[in-house]
Image (cartoon, rainbow, N blue to C red; front, side, top):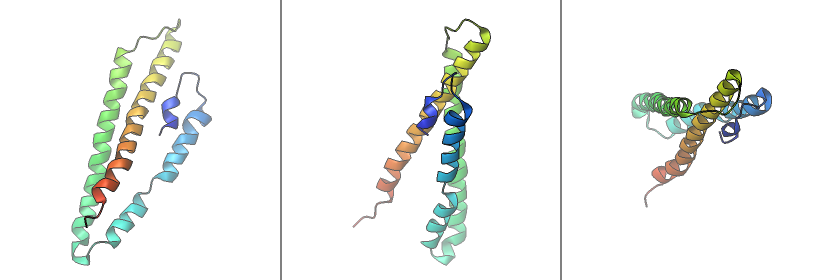
Amino acid sequence: MAWLTQLSAASDYFTAVFGPLLLVGVGVAFVTLNVTIMSNVAQKEAGATSGLIQTIQWLGGTLGLAVWVTIFGTTIRGNHSTATSAVDRAHEVLALSVSRAFIGAALTAAATLILVPIALRKRH
């Protein structure tokens, strides 16, 4: 995610977009996470747990997308590029807006990596 925050108007697709998105795709562990969660649940609770997992995944994705699109839109509306041509200005504003949206996504991922282990810590 942090790699995607480095986008600029001069970025090359394969090094600035394809590479990081490939890593994101490889790193997504929904299936493994679901198996891990479901293996620690009593059989009579499996249906409710499965439904809760799906609901949380959909809500998390929806909320995250809403926040990141808001960051993108706010940046695009408030940015004034200094480029001379309209095409160059559009490229600069788009790249900056996408980069800032990914900064929001990276911060969300970092917060999740910090908060989830704390929330799941077993109480003794």
